Length: 83
Image 1 (tube, rainbow, N blue to C red):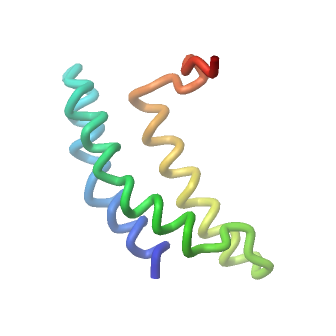
Image 2 (image 1 turned 135 degrees about the horizontal axis):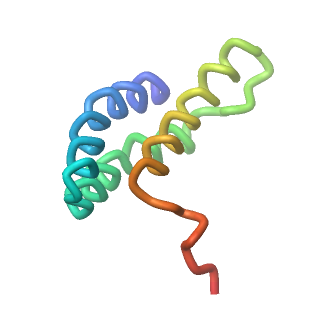
Image 3 (image 1 turned 135 degrees about the vertical axis):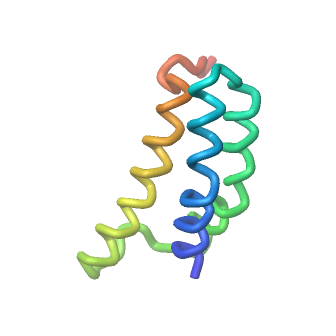
């Protein structure tokens, strides 16, 4: 399912993304984040994150939190202009 694919993509991509950010190579870090897009898009298209089953909901929210935490390691998205 899509949540397994997103989890695998995060597990596979996170180390390289964090390593690139750690050495100041933000282009490579953002490229790594961008490479997660297909798995992220499929996850949000195919998965009901707020499932009635509490275990499923918690696991899915955990994936979303992991993605958020990874992005926040390399970018302060609160600074993105909305105008």
